[in-house]
Length: 486
Ligand code: ADP
Ligand code: GLC
Image (cartoon, rainbow, N blue to C red; front, top):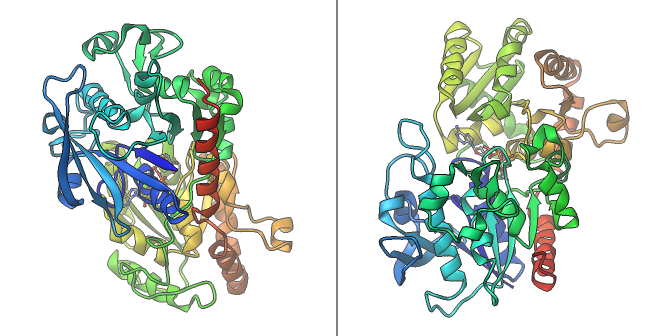
């Protein structure tokens, strides 16, 4: 099958969060089972610099665009995934990250930037670049690609479309003037297409007009059909009926492998976890904490945003300190949360280590060196860090929501007896519920080293690979091709 995977970020070229991990690994998994999946990305400086063998293959004159965009072809990453790059320097050749300027604000012209990207995806897919390759399906991801399906709506001979929601909290909402400025077909300004409460909604376009829609875990697929998680789109998601479902993400077993990870101090595996101790001591040293094998070490890695429940960690921190454990945290984002973390770092410097910033290598060392991983998210479409934690024998403490609920099995008498327990799960997003889960984790750790190791090992033995999920995506692609939903 020929699949064009459209994303606004993909590891190892450009990453702000989990979408990049998925866009970097699902195409590899699909190619591995014999399908011709190719990636298309905007030409940010990192993409232009890090992709291999880029050369210009076409010049695209796109509707609504003053200047033509170049289409480049090359490959991405160690698996040499075929890559197309939309080189439109006036939109993409900038410092900062794909969505934000260096001072942390959204780029003012994000609507124009990603409309250009969507138009280039459509032009490429309809062979306006005159290449010898045309996709049977476009797999579009998140709001930045939300205009792809709407732009194809009236095309008779078109590829099928799948739209994946990685996070419904980011929707690409703009005012009506922006809709006019983008020169989109006027009929798309309708309740059935892009108009959402008098605003332009990119994500609504993807949800309403793609042949199939999915999100990244079965539980989140149910949650977003409710008012609590749906941001007003719950009715539309319900309306898509069986054309909307949830497929759990996998993780990249080559990048996240404690037996073969160049970033960590010592290799280990489920059969021989002794190396994990060395990683713990090395991590304590790296953060300037007392090196002590038997002090329980908790870790956090992630974007510092409301979604992740970092404020709940701040609430329970004094209690954690009284319990004598250590905590290390790595993240960046919201300035107030960054400052709050720096404050607790100063206050509890002998037991808390904080690094503000983005550090790929350190994220691996935290996964390898900690005993427990904190992920008290308010909502979590899938979540990758709890899966990396399971793979690294670092027992996750998670809230019972989205992909966290689908990947972590709570420690209780039944799951301990049948050997399925993998972590500590709590229900309500408040400090006292998180604290109860943490007390449980602390007691469990202190009670028996052997039981703790069994728990960690059970996590390490879970199948978190892309194998099963890549098959589910293929089934969905085939359904979209055979039975267009629109
Ligand atoms: P989300 O996509 O909502 O941010 P995920 O758990 O799906 O959450 O994925 C986050 C990804 O980004 C993981 O690979 C995680 O390790 C990485 N990550 C997040 N923040 C940082 C950071 N400060 N430094 C290094 N990696 C980070
Ligand atoms: C989003 C979600 C996260 C998910 C990731 C990859 O950023 O917040 O839960 O794991 O996308 O699908």
